[in-house]
Each structure stands twice: as structure tokens, then as C-alpha cells.
Amino acid sequence: MNEVSAEGGAPVPSVERIYEALKQVYDPELGINIVDLLGLVYDVSVSEEGDVHVEYTLTTMGCPIGPLIEQQIQAFVAQVPGVRSVTAEMVLRPPWSPEMMSEEAKAALGFF
Image 1 (cartoon, rainbow, N blue to C red):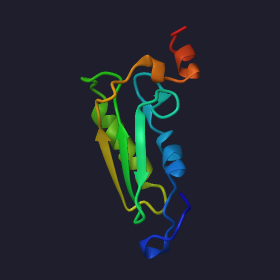
Image 2: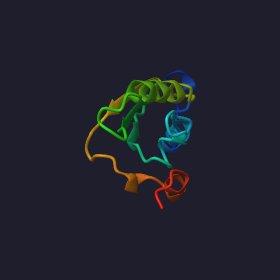
Image 3: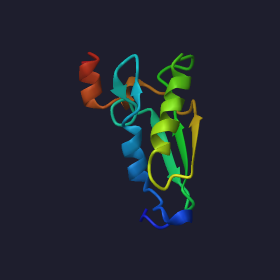
Image 4: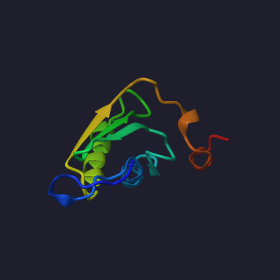
């Protein structure tokens, strides 16, 4: 997606730029980012007006850090220039599994 001017002249951020912001969100129990290491972010969309929607999951359904992860998603994405609003939606399908982690994360957590 090309960056174009949103209301107020700020550029609409690309999906790639939102993913970069999401790499700052870390699972506090594991110390690993939720995007490319854990694979918890399933989808990101950005409207022409700068509204961002993030679909994510958690490693377990009853994960107690869910609210913290969502707060971090909101905070880091809202800082991206051109973002008008952020909606974070936790989804349970497909269920997360360790196969979704990067090789680096698997090695760090002893999955080999």
C-alpha cells in the first residue's frame, strides 16, 4: 500500500509500518516480540483514513496477559504518524501453536 495523505495531511501508514510498530510489543513472560518471533499477529489492515485493525491471538486461551498485550498494541500503533484509530481484536481461530514461532524463538525457548 502506498502512503497517501489522510485527513490533516498526515500520511496513511503502510501495513508494513504497522507491523514494525507491533514488533515493539513483547510477551512479558517470554520476553519475545509477538509478531515475527511468536507469530501472534494474524492480520493487519489500514483504511484510507488511517484506521488500523489488528487481529491477534494468545499462546493459550486463558492467558492472563491478554489485556496487557492489547494495551501495548494500542499504544505502539497509535504512535505511528497517520494513524487515526486502532482496533485490536483477539481471535481464537486458528489456534496458536509453537509451529507459528520463528526458528529463533524456538531456539531461545528450547523447542529443539
